[in-house]
Length: 158
Image (cartoon, rainbow, N blue to C red):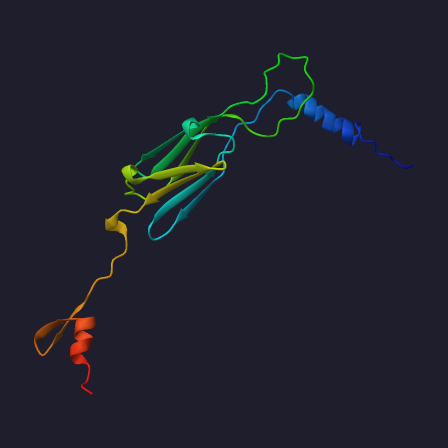
């Protein structure tokens, strides 16, 4: 005796059920962000399509950069009875907090918004940037600075 398994609903009907179930629900907007750290500072790049600079708020507290905003729902709110629609993009208030290195100066942050991309640049403070340290060397009891002066004095005469 052969057993035949029958799927209770056709795939297209199952998909329609998902659309009807999700009708009217809007997912939250969570903008993706990149964090880049180089020798000169930190750059955070965030995708915020459709937003203007006045829709965004940026705050740096200790080592936490927080970006807040709201992506408004662009369609008229219907109270039932409207056409079935699928909304995949997220809307509403959002807040992204990103850990950055300590010691960044909030007064030196440069933020720009172009083509739906927010770029926040924070220079590293002078105290945390790498510095070249000169080494002094002693020769015959005299202290000499190692570097260009020391190599010029110790170069053999031609």
